[in-house]
Image 1: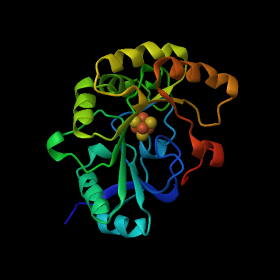
Image 2: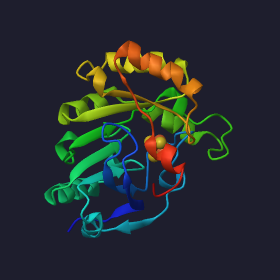
Image 3: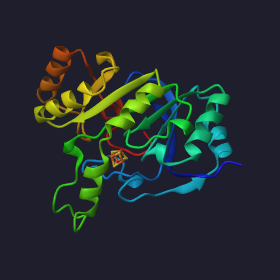
Length: 237
Ligand code: SF4
């Protein structure tokens, strides 16, 4: 029997980000993350993990008639049971997207993924000195040491032919870091790279202009967050 998974929340909604934007999906958000992004929009799965443990059977039953599922977090790749959940959903005929920051991955235990959605964390994600959630800065140091692993990203790209790589960007200062990362991932097509504006409210036209211009110049995709537009920064959406 599969071990249970710590679950922060589950819900049915539409996918708000990436190639499958707008597709009705069943979302499973695991509780627990090895990072602590300063701007994390789901702190109940990272800074202060909440929820309960759920069995794989229970989760698959809850997916119901959904044809798409998104296993997100938190960091799903931390948990061995993610593999069981992905296999069970796949066995039930469900298209499985896994969302990961791409910091940990064992190719010999790769979960089934019809779409691997990888979101490497840039320097803009590191908790700032004086963050009241991180007195002493232990998480700042841990986050900085863990947030980017090129070998792990390379292994994920090798294992998953269907993928997208989403970067949360805060300013044009982020572009050199993205260029540097991508220069080490030559197998990733530009069309699979996405820039997503940081923030938990709909961005203004002015604030998005530099992102759109960067995408046009480099052949990347601009990634709007439809769920923020439609529902705001609310749980269960
Ligand atoms: S990797 Fe995702 S869940 Fe973890 S702290 Fe960063 S934004 Fe939050």
